[in-house]
Image 1 (cartoon, rainbow, N blue to C red):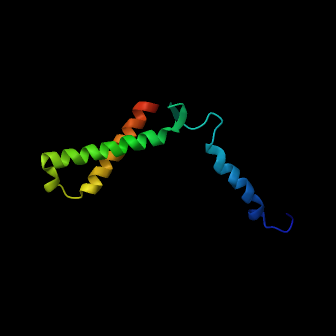
Image 2 (image 1 turned 90 degrees about the horizontal axis):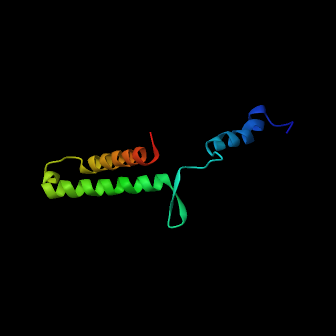
Amino acid sequence: MKGFPRTLRALPFLGFMWLGGCSAVGAPSFVAFGAFFPAWMLCGSIGIIGAIVARAVFVGTGLANVLPHQLLVCTAIGTISAIVGWLLCFGW
């Protein structure tokens, strides 16, 4: 390692710094059907369901005919519902 520049010698230690988010406690998860599932997967599913429900409401009320940028609006509603689901299920 004597011939390498100082920045290259520090490179392996940067990998350990990136692993600092992996704690001994583990990532938030829940037990479903006897297996551990990550919490983000549950909240992502809540967001997808929220976007689908919003789209169904827009089509059912006729708002889809006058609402511009429906994809952006449904994506925003899905994201908001996923974040609210995270806050309600796993705390502030």
